[in-house]
Length: 323
Image 1 (cartoon, rainbow, N blue to C red):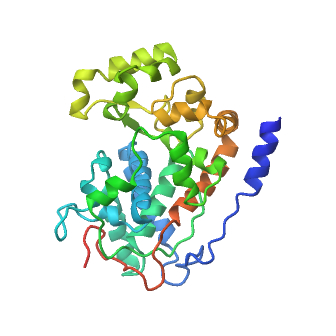
Image 2: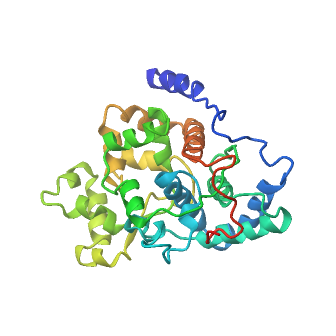
């Protein structure tokens, strides 16, 4: 009961103010009022054709926002601009997919609202639709982002994106800098409920010098992971495991799984035992509605982090190139 009371109090305080960020919930009211419907209708058949698309788009947005803010820099072709390859060439962007879906939706938006809507806003809206289409909450997001006029190097992306081996303390520090509370920091990791994890990301957990992390796993799950992610195949980057048993559904199964000792990544397992995060993992495992509320608030905070607004940046006509 105490956990629930604490959680409810926190959720009531999870209010955010977009003033000062140059974003607005009515930003396109006059210039492109139908933009959200265009994005939704454009993505619907794509989601039906390929049910892995929602997870890919959600990850795409997360990786874009964590490098230099939500500015669609990740969409720029990785062929290289200037002396270094672009962000997409970063090793930590391995497995990033479905960038072309944003380009397709952008062309639909351009047909009705030429040079009005940024690729950055379309990417955030696409990620929002990915969550809703998978059974998660429909998140109301402020708009008005501008696109970057350059793409950061792959070196900056690799330095900015968290490693697969990140622990609780570093994770909380990253999200605190984006204004997230403890509850929101745990909730945003619930995005792991969609999609897969490549075996190469958990090789240290499975085959580290002391295999200490295996002791924290439920024994049959540890055996399953080692069978699926055999050491001789790790270098290929082709082997993977599902993040949880309902990897196509946005639900709270990620937390249920973690509570059972079936967390795939290090952070998934550590959150259960760390005193700062354990109560929220337990609460979200029992209460999906509260998880959805906290995730929605965290999603908005991430989506407004480091944005370009006003006269900053540009509105690209083609998301994959800077002109």
